[in-house]
Amino acid sequence: MSALAAYFAMGGYAGFVWPAYAIAAAVLGGLATHFWRRYRASRDALAGLQPPGGNQE
Figure 1 (cartoon, rainbow, N blue to C red):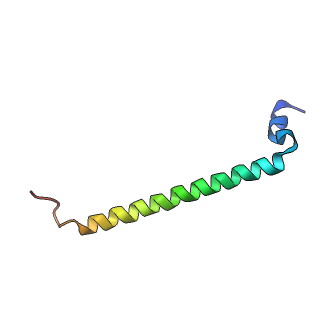
Figure 2: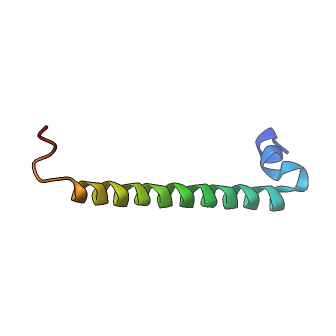
Figure 3: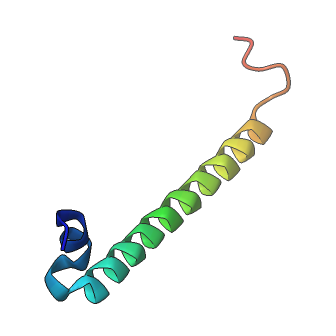
């Protein structure tokens, strides 16, 4: 067996390791997407609260 195939087999635990990596990546990607969308909504809401023409002090 080649070294690369041995790595991907994870010593026989590939059935547990790779799904765990996939779940972790999905959770992190979901969190990043959630916070990115929330940031955009907050930015747009703040822009709507600013007076027209910006701050002219």
